[in-house]
Amino acid sequence: MAVQNLFSEAEVTIGPWIEKGFYYDFDMKLLFTQKHLRKIKTELLARIYHLYELLYTPHINKLGLWKTSEHYYFYKENIYYQMQIEEELYHNLPTN
Image (spheres, rainbow, N blue to C red):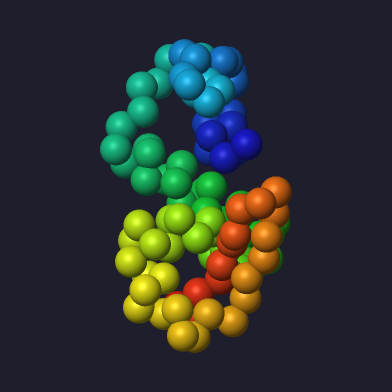
């Protein structure tokens, strides 16, 4: 992990629960400062770019979302991809 790579004394623990999981917590004497957090972020991003290839994919959403945002009405003549899943229409708009 990025934090353990920067701070070898850090022991990973489970932090507070949230709606979709939990936060990681770290057992260590040092309190993180903004400077530490910037270093951690840099380390995380370096690991992501080193381990994963950046991939761009189109945004495919339900027709209702495109209508709510009004993208559908503006681009409806140029829609080039549409699919139906379980009676719901999904579109890929030309803005992608």
